[in-house]
Amino acid sequence: MADLSALDDLAAGQDRGADLIVRHPVTGEAIGVLTIAGPDSDTQRRARLQMQDELYAFKGRPPAAEYDRMDIDRLARCVVSWNLKRAGQDVPFAHTAVVKLLREHQSVRQQVEQFSQDRAPYFLRLPMEQE
Image 1 (tube, rainbow, N blue to C red):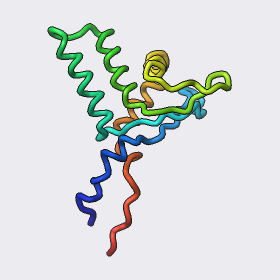
Image 2: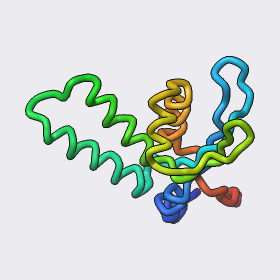
Image 3: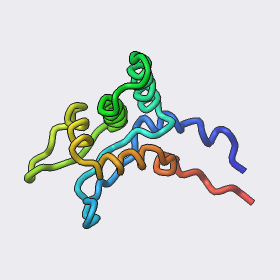
Image 4: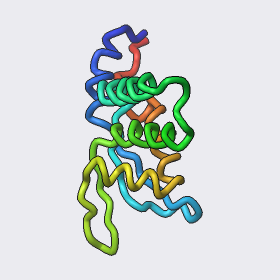
């Protein structure tokens, strides 16, 4: 039986991120790799808190377009690096470039959202239980 020590490196490991292979929404062809911080990481926690602070700054509910902007920004903060090319050239990694990618390509945004909520890619391989 595993014990709590199996979770000790979980947050630190998730801050290092896991690689999401971004796929074309129709063909499934690999387009590039985004490294995403996991759901238990300090990176995602800070991104959620920043979005909550922005939400609390509104009196009532923010307009839908503003909420969408905040949500894209939150998600972009979870991307810690990438390996993408455009016309054969490396695309420089920057937060603003990630925001632009997620805003312009809904299929990529959906892939990042789904991957960032899944803990499985972040777990370290644990030794099998001795019977």
